Length: 330
Ligand SMILES: NC(=O)c1ccc[n+]([C@@H]2O[C@H](COP(=O)([O-])OP(=O)(O)OC[C@H]3O[C@@H](n4cnc5c(N)ncnc54)[C@H](OP(=O)(O)O)[C@@H]3O)[C@@H](O)[C@H]2O)c1
Image (tube, rainbow, N blue to C red; front, side, top):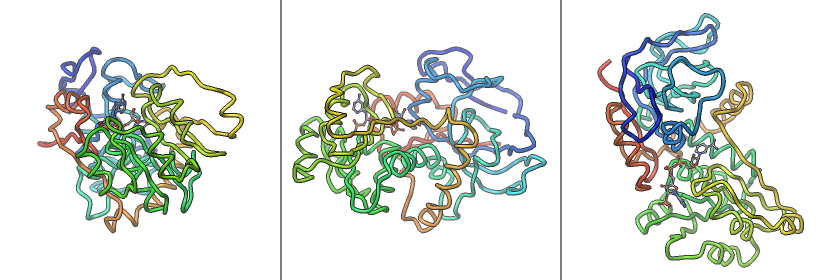
């Protein structure tokens, strides 16, 4: 099969197609013929050698954490799927390829109304957002949340999920065009951080009360300011650290306002935790995807052969929603 195999680390030019064997199908696995794979920021880090796959190391390091396609082989202990079923899946790597193997528990059916490109943009972004909003921050009806990078893959998913749950959403973005996009996804307040101070804007929006939670992807540059917008018992969920990892913090502030700071990471989780989260996510959201009330926003698609261009494009921060690689001709 054709796959983007990382034979060296570096710039986008290392993303080259190689011919390698189709992966084996373990007894609890399925093999998926990939039609589309979602791009994630983590793939850019992996390409540079900064985000190795969790143990055990695969024979071939192939990026790609999510995909959509058709089941081509079914492990002998798998009862849920048959060859030919359309599925999307959360994988620990390997989706930039014609075929990928994964535990059957990490895949679920694609509703009829959803294209392969849309389905490939659901697993990583939506499950990360779901976990952050409802497990980590424990948010519920009527509460206020600030979602940074609201036009990104995870941000656009988080805004939709939050609105569906009756939360009030403020979000930050980096351009006037993105302001319009995030309002259309359901944000109540959109802040262009180039022109506006998000702390002042969010405090005004909450009538100086502060808000219940922040979903952050920015890290270093926003850490102290994120704490400034939280009210007593507020929660900061760290999902990404796009501006860097190191930060200063006033511990007294955390103590006085009884704040919670937590992080989340999907790829490195134990299989059982991941399965449980996927099942819960699927049970609670499948109907909304089928009715079109939740959808992966697809910004742009690139053929697998143009993975390097797709990586360069993601690094420019232009995308609104997901960037998808399409796999054709097999
Ligand atoms: N923890 C997990 O399990 C998990 C899972 C998925 C993703 N993530 C992380 O979540 C983050 C977002 O992922 P994504 O897929 O949504 O990425 P994405 O679609 O590429 O969106 C990221 C957006 O963040 C903004 N941004 C980039 N650098 C920034 C900076 N230094 N300061 C402020 N804003 C910046 C840009 O939008 P603007 O133009 O609006 O600024 C950019 O388009 C990444 O760090 C990713 O690694 C974590």
